[in-house]
Image 1 (cartoon, rainbow, N blue to C red):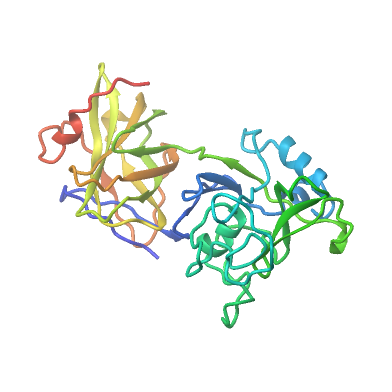
Image 2 (image 1 turned 180 degrees about the vertical axis):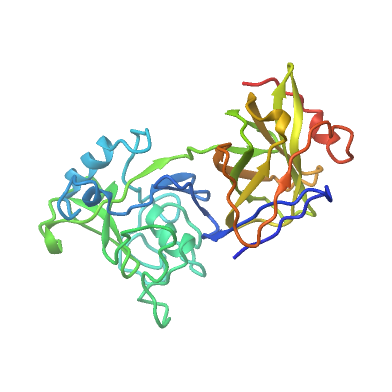
Length: 348
């Protein structure tokens, strides 16, 4: 599916190509997926322990799973962990009975829409299952086709149980979540009462890792300009706007100059898009810095634009339908750019 983004400059045309993703999950394209709601990054491969050859099938006892996640180095990061399960009510665990309405920490529909603690982020895997991926429990919903129907951009996410990094009252048990039926429970850490002798492990880390810009934060990247310039972008907003704009500048002669911009966005995006530009001949070969910035005309929309695959490599992608932005220089007098240009930053 392709979607056109409006531009305030009539002679600029933007190349846009999109791939659907779930609203809170941003596929960074490097085997990692950022969860904007939980502010954590998930491994895209939910059984990377097996894929990487660490374990023959990915089934591990709890201590092994903790060690695997704690020792994991992926994407240059070494602070991986297992997902946590904190109280659904935000204060104290309630494991007094197996609930089907999400009212306890032991049961089905924990944090699911329509339950008493709907949207609770205490259990990262329950939130992933019910809220991010939009799956339904096989118990207590009476929904035909419930279970792990949606897996998003994740791979090897199975209808099976995954360890959390949270033990059960410091006993011989640890908490887990079953991605097959949506139940959250606890089991012996040594796997003695698990089919197969253990559970699977899915690694997460706190925070994001990729570049982004907001109305208060610009992003600067070093780049040698070739004949084309491209990047992927994905935006979210705090509230629906009439529009906000993104500008792109390059640095030369000790000042920032407009490379292309006034790209106007309306509404929140749930897909990555790709922008590809033709660079003017006079700028090709220039070793410079590229600065991305956004502003929202004071509408309190709190825009954030996530970026990836920033490149100038001489080959422009041409998706269908395709148009090209012709980047211009010397456009500093064009109306609409002035509000942004008051932020004259030096390069980092």
